[in-house]
Length: 404
Ligand SMILES: Cc1cc2nc3c(=O)[nH]c(=O)nc-3n(C[C@H](O)[C@H](O)[C@H](O)COP(=O)(O)OP(=O)(O)OC[C@H]3O[C@@H](n4cnc5c(N)ncnc54)[C@H](O)[C@@H]3O)c2cc1C
Image 1 (cartoon, protein in one colour):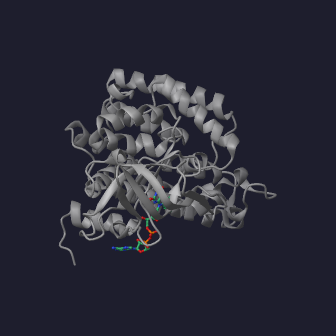
Image 2: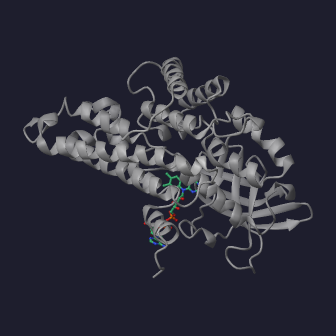
Image 3: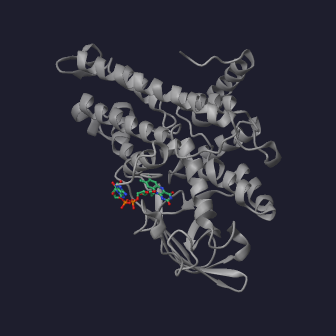
């Protein structure tokens, strides 16, 4: 059974779809693959021309009132209900567009975290430039020895009068090369229990002592970075929540991150594109689209993708009851990133040698987007908490299974 939308909601979808199709063409051009292989490849690009397109799309979203639909109007957001937010996700996914314009981390999770835990001054100072895209943000949680085990962070922030002095290193920081600000976790009391002596800080990346270096991924892109802090100063007023109480703030932000993680990959679109491609390539000595194994696999993927969409609709119940996102977001994150990976691996199997041809190679299919997706897909099963960690969360905090 499908979800029934009211006539007003259907009208919203029709308007939004027309706006998106027109705007995508105006900003990115009309070619099928104008947006590139994935929303992430657009957002985290080092190509200044593509980044300018991402910013232009961001400004258009804002002007049309579609950016930050989940933010309250008081802070310049759309103040939309959950159903409109869901329709927006559907339509953005349909075209393979990033959900939050160019300022992904700010709009998705850092802004909502500030609204919940930040001081009035922090809200006044930071929320508007997040929306306009004038200040891009990144998220500094992971360190070389603290990823899944985030409480192992060692970056230190020591109070010196009205300022923190920060020393240490973050790694895998997506978008830091474009960001002016970072929401980061630092250890402020090394004598306290691991989860206790941590503070959530807002750090100006233009400060003296910050060094940002690109990290290269196997796609050839460098969407993320490592950041070194050498006596970097940040005002005490940039702590969000109380000093040494940052774990609570950090976990709340992870809740927002996981809630949207399930709607970030345009998996249904990818499956449809692969089905389309199957009409043009051979597999097992016949047209791939006629091969029973290909047909069966694509049908199975389509069923699972549909279930994922219905799962998103189902999570509306929680939103409608006003519950902030909790650990159940791990279901969506786990299933969508794993399905995305399986689709990519199947593309490799179906395309054989053609799957290895990257953009610019003679004979590359669709400007090498499948080669790119095959290399990229595994990232999403790691970023934002690995699949193993999502399974642990589901087991321990959703299903309440005993810890081993
Ligand atoms: C594309 C991408 C973008 C990213 N962007 C950011 C960013 O912007 N900001 C940021 O802070 N971080 C970012 N990250 C980092 C990401 O959050 C970490 O990579 C992730 O949390 C895993 O940590 P780790 O890499 O240290 O791996 P580890 O924690 O060392 O894990 C290694 C392996 O051990 C497994 N493992 C670890 N602990 C357990 C356990 N308890 N039970 C079962 N298995 C376990 C893991 O699942 C994994 O397979 C990004 C990562 C990627 C891939």
